[in-house]
Length: 423
Image 1 (cartoon, rainbow, N blue to C red):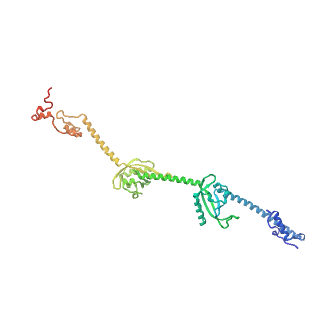
Image 2 (image 1 turned 45 degrees about the vertical axis):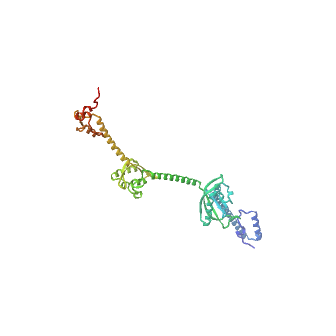
Image 3 (image 1 turned 60 degrees about the vertical axis):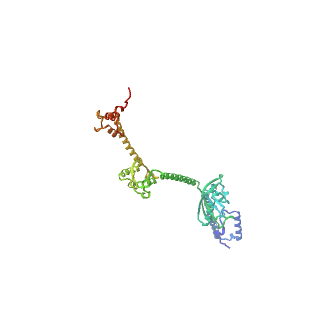
């Protein structure tokens, strides 16, 4: 009796990986199926059987090659997984629902300063600074309550040095448990956490915060000086419009900043006679020619004029472009008045000094009537001339000699000075 055979009847699997056990199993199956009388086969049937065996052998060889290729690809994938997971620049940790670390890569172990094997079955909270553990607790609660990714920043302990702490960023997501074995949490979601060392960033942020705080103190100090300064502090844009000024200008001019902000400075505060020159100086200042000590007049809201001495400095942006002009002015109205009064007093003193010098010089006086000739050629009595050119005043009386000569009856010789004295 002739029995037909197929490739699937000859072998049950590939040759690769077979051993004594598989061979024994195969022999037992052959015996169970019974043996065939090969001698009874016709040459054609035997030829067909041999052909099928060869074809099936080639199929097995091809399958074996595919398995070898799959093995190579698997090893390559494992190496890539090692590079992507274990050698990643961030730490990867898988945490069970009970909070125990199930898996961790080498980077996570390096960040925490412990061996990777020592992390497994430990709680991540053991490596969190006690003050920040509430942050991690809230992150887990929110993660499992919403199922959405959660992020937080906290401080972790690094066990390479006692008391070593570093800032880390935790990015947590929910994923189904992929563990197998008796400890697997079948159907219970796990927490996958990405650990990033942000110590350098935190240091930069702290440095920036200190820098901002220092700038704030400097700005507040400068603002206090501007607000308290007994001088005009004025900021103009490149078109000469008012950007801001301090309370001192409000005090002396009577204008409030909100009422004139954005208006042309020259047209608002300067008399028309001073506007052309001031606009010229303004353009020169924007071009880099600073004003130092220029004096002009401003008109107050009530029409009074004040004399102001100006100093300016250009304002630039980060690119160095001129964006405006900082102008400081000192009210010198009182000083100008004092200088005018002083000049007038000096003129008067000089005139008086000239007059005094004239009296000290040679005076043309009449030898007979004793009149004095002035610079215009007029003759005046001595007392009139002296009164006119000095502050001296005269009181009129009569001397004893003249009294005796003019009034002998009233002034006898016995009343003359020295009468009755013997020589």
